[in-house]
Amino acid sequence: MANKKNIKSKKEIKTEKNNKVFNCVIVGTGGQGLITLLEVLSDAAIKSGLDAKTSELHGLSQRGGSVEVHIKFGKKVFSPLVEAKKADLIVGLEMQECLKAAYFSGPQTQYLINKTEVAIPGKPLLAEEEIIGNLKKFTKKIEVIDAADICQKELGTAAVSGVYLLCLAAFKNLILLSPDLMREAIKSSVAAKHLEVNMKAWELAKKNAQ
Image: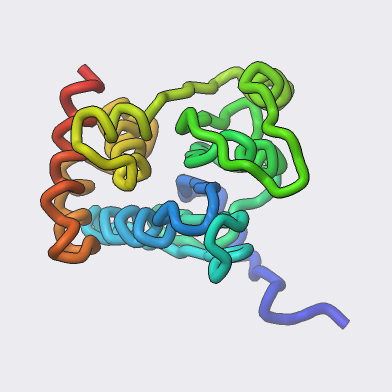
């Protein structure tokens, strides 16, 4: 028997067709701060006057394990999960994890990838060329940035590389949220003891996006 909660009304379907929803997937590994990134995006979307829904999937309690989070925002959002081939933006904090997100990729999908690989026990690291080659089967819009190295050299820590990438996406108009609202969302979403370095990551993204 079908679950009535998952059956959309004609009004909902019509509203969805007339409503542009931005679909974003972020992938990485445990300990890379994906939940914080989700909170920043959600807060920025709400500050923009948009409806936002989020979902956290896979291995959240396991440090180093695969983590995948979804956010959708628009005038009205009916589901938190990005559908197959519907992602507008996929942010990868670890290169190999981006292959798992290929399911959500279509020709319109923009990848923004941190040039970092985390070893998977019992498996060899994949070459960057192999990873990108496989992703190009789904979309040609792929940008690889050595965010961890940039943040380590400029800010003294690679821990803010995810925030750096999100802010870069805003400055490059890869995401439908303004950089200023991203900055305000960082202020309200990041713990006080980490706020200064995250604000510096925003400034660094601004400088490097020019």
